[in-house]
Length: 227
Length: 191
Image (cartoon, rainbow over all chains, first blue to last red; front, side, top):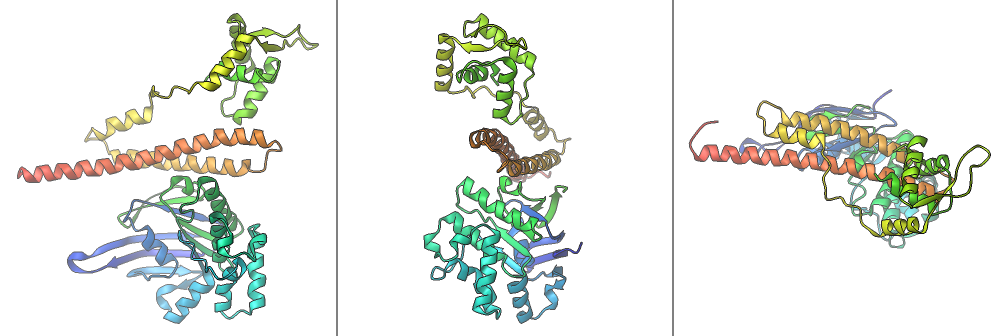
């Protein structure tokens, strides 16, 4: 099966000379459809850099990152932005839902930005909500939802349309443990339905939801649990 | 784990014979600590000797004798619910012992010991998480499902605690080796 995300001997260096930081130092990994991969490691081990490169929010100093076969370093800035919009969904700890838009409008927004009609975007948004059993939230505004509901809506937004790569950075944030489990269950279900997921976390409990766990230290993969 | 107290607590619901108690025990613990019927009857015999249970009538058609709590048995159960379980005596733990020896022995790669343990714990954690997923919605009886979740979540939290402890030991080792190189440098010696 073709990998949705393929990183090959990726290096990312910040700064130069005395202050050079090798944030990533030769990382290779693949994430296939249906797979959820957790990334763990101490602070400063390169987890966030890895996530940013995987989401085409940053480019490698050397090596390649391919998303759905498209190599990020070979694209111009417009094509890169389109790749991000169409292929990659990101769930951050801060929800980033727009307060003046309903759940359905928040989810449909990336599609509208990409040129879809409002009615098409709404249909896709309702589909995404239905997949997550959240359709009753469609017309609620963020302040009318609980933290757990907002985070699940953020995951729905991350996976609306054709996007098949979802990147999550500590997605359960400050949620209580039972609500947090609900959010991870949704991420798991999306991957089981064919998406590829990367979950950056320092909570081993959360990494337990993944198919594989990758440990980073000093920008290198030091261990990887088998499937 | 106290089989005695658990069986008394189950008998507080009403009389039951050994096989029935065993089934109830398994149902509440998700089969994590399976009991055999022999164990149940030995325990019941001891409880009868101690005056906490008595036979509730004669054997049924299949020769099974139901037992019920005596007033002393009821008191014992009440007392059990009220008293905290003593967790202050640490059990001897092979992993703790192994790591305590490893970090103090320069001929052992303690980091590798930690890493292989971490991988094993993570794999275990993943298995438990899958079991938890399978549990969701599998039980028609919500209270029995809750009992199962209690047992499973305890295992999950225990593995999580172990993983955090492993991380912490690794950080402590890094700090110690850092401090030692500082001392060596201050003394003007080379390591």
